[in-house]
Amino acid sequence: SGAVDVSASTPGTYTVTYTTAGTCPNSSNVSVTINALPSVTFTAPASPYCPCTATTGLGGGLPTGGVYSGAGVTDDGNGTSYSFDSTGISGANTITYTFTDANGCTNSNSDDVTVQDTTPPTISCPADIILNNENGVCGAVATWLSTDVSASDNCSISSVTQTSGLNSGDIFPVGTTTNTFLVSDNSGLTATCSFNVIVEDNEDPTWVNAPT
Image (cartoon, rainbow, N blue to C red):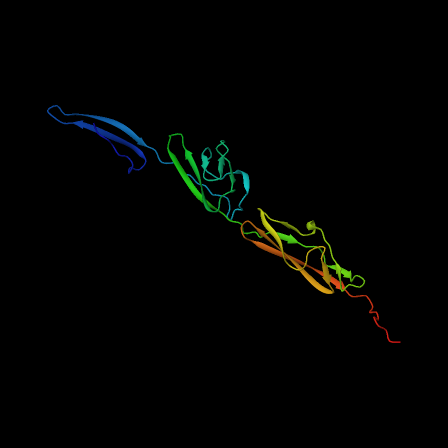
């Protein structure tokens, strides 16, 4: 009995001879073919890839007929495509394409996609509000709807907060009050917008104790 290690051999056909020892030596030959591993290529989706995003119909592995694997990867079972969902994934993520040829030889190729949000959220504020002061008051009540300050993000919004100014429904003093709002997404990216409430004093003064 014996073993033949072909792992270091180059592809091709070899003759293996087995010879017995003793007073009656004998030998036997067998032909062994070593097949080359298939050449496999694969390119992952472009980085950076947005968190909380699912994309279907991805591919790129050659030769076709293999299987895609990795975190967030769902192989479509057709040998050509897969879907990738980056929910819960952050940083470098490895996707692997594995192919087995007709000879039963298997090879694979891997590539990394970096899941990272680089797009800040957007936020918009209403136009400036210009008011006259209310009679007898050195200011005026200004109101706006909560929907007048709108924010959006390519992934998800963490919070929208007012960082300066007064609240809707407050009495704003004569002059200009700047109201600033800040939006933050779940990746820590931020954006701001502002609008002014301008209260103009158009009320003439009156005598309290007019001279006679």
